[in-house]
Length: 269
Image 1: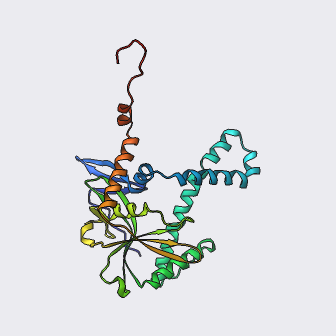
Image 2: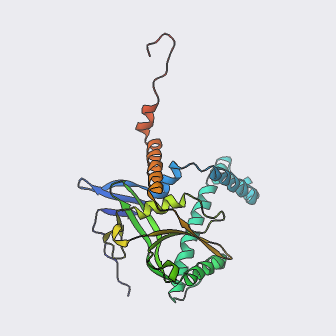
Image 3: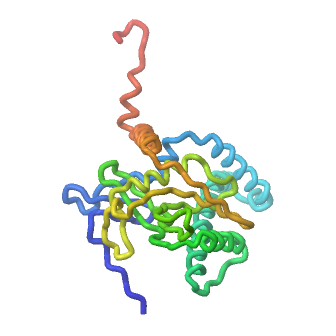
């Protein structure tokens, strides 16, 4: 019988996709900004606009007959939700790929769905080729000063001689487009967290992990690619700027202060 994990006893909580930090005796605490939410709102992504329109158009064509039988309001709702369904499906697929790959690499017997078999095999190939020692996987973390939270995919060591002494924080990517530069900001944010929630559900200092390098691993159905990502004061500063922008545009009170009262001819300014 599997041992049940103890409940977290520290101030940090992950509830679904949200992160909370107890503050001032309030058990619910304050909601932390998510790393990916910060990057989504604070970094321009013109390619995503094109992607969203393409996904919506493809949904309309692929489901033309089905959608034509729906009331107009429902049809519109289905099309408006196309990009979110695609995003959620891709995220679920990515998580499933690396979870299965890690189990297979550890010698476990698992059933791999046909639609992701190639991706899983590529991920296992990476783990084997780089002789990976897994330290942590799917680990929530947070920064109690910058007030953000997130979950990093993988902390590892490679037993290859050229990577001796490195402690590598890595992120799996299974998208079609490859690795974007902002992945460096995502990984830098995780690496600069102050604490992480360990397998024992206790909080530990991120500094104790001794992270030296950041990698992005692009897994495809036929192969994989590994890219070292920048880990510097510059990437940390850029993430911090993005956080400031994201918070400003999402704070309605701040945004309201930026817009003055309407001016009318003859009225005092």
